[in-house]
Image 1 (cartoon, rainbow, N blue to C red):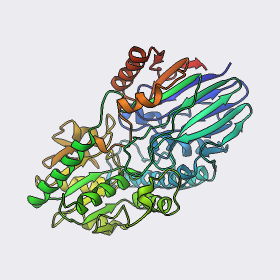
Image 2: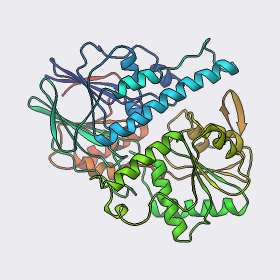
Image 3: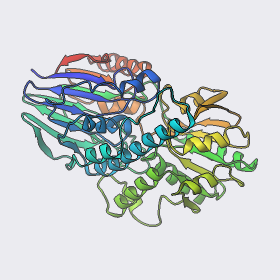
Image 4: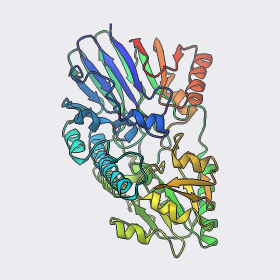
Length: 457
């Protein structure tokens, strides 16, 4: 009998890791980095929570750090097995892991120079060599193709519509099968087609990032336009901390639509994130090559990602010049949760000025700076110093690439029902709410697993 152990993404929205053990083979679905609160982040530094000598393969559902960012740690500890992904995930995860390693090394260097770390010396969790070794393990497979990935374990990917390359994973182990949702996208995603229906399975793992909330697209778009107009009218600029992968592309498309419709002024738009610019190239290539995930309407006509006055900031000097905007502009910079990257320098410069606006456009995990801003913090700590929050803060989570509660339920609750549904990758309130809806509205057995819990499949 196969078992499933929840090594992350249980009781929290980060660190997704789900270990399947058939008795003869072990497969880890997702290999995510913990983010947010310090107790979670400290878990990244512990010994890997599995026997690497017995691990046969890793499956990545998509390229966000909370699903792939721990992979270089396994490599640093000597693991050299295959990592199965889609083509889009392989392309984007290579960018994400290289950038993550660079930021870790740079932050350790800054901490040592400035003395704001309690560690002497501060060290990176992993470096560029670890990331490169991890990237070389990628083995892309096509959507809807069945592939044997370990003895007695077959894998099929289906479109998840969350970011380019994102997939749900269908594992067949003997006479039992499991579907892991990964992160599910929205039917109204501005770039990608909706998620494919899930196949029948004995057990289902479904994410619950927005398990207790809904998205109002029309209201969000109207508020976004109004926020930009108001900020520009008072001579301020808009800073958007955005995930470098997918969120930047979605925001650019929305800005282009609003400019062309005359809903917002035609302002300079700066994309200030090397990783975001690299992922933008991948998205543009996917549109040009008509990848099967891309919405057909984007494949013809003008560049959907160009609002009109788009500037790509590649160097640190260019980034610093944008720190104190002299005229109204829009800055899109990573990371989306403001846990690191160039956006921190923009926040330090812009937060003390009430002319500016910070727009939080996606999910902000507990313990992150974006979550503190969403919660109304009057100051936040950046690079060892507290920065006052006087700028306007606007929250627009309808721009999230995550399905909301109704969309999650519509995807999961198709017939035939699984024997057990495990509600994962969500904060406790969201996970419990979604599990309760599955039980009360559909009569399913839905469980919120405990961290470290092992169950029979």
